[in-house]
Amino acid sequence: MYKEALCPIYQIDGMTPVVPDESYVHPTAVLIGDVILGKGVYVGP
Image (cartoon, rainbow, N blue to C red; front, side):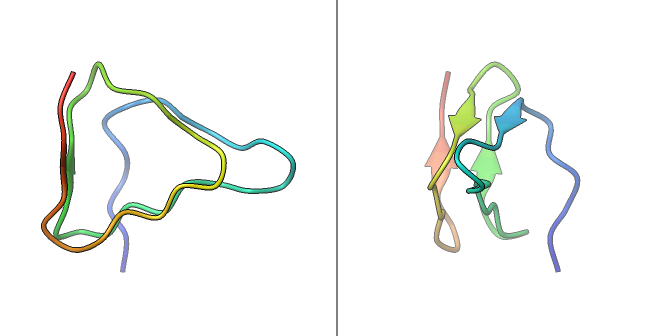
């Protein structure tokens, strides 16, 4: 299950970032393309 993103997430070349519920992405961070975060990952500004 994946939560609604609090930061911008962009698809590129058909690839969309994956953010599991157990990770955190700061609202000012931006994820683009082929990104897969693991559980417990923190992405800061």
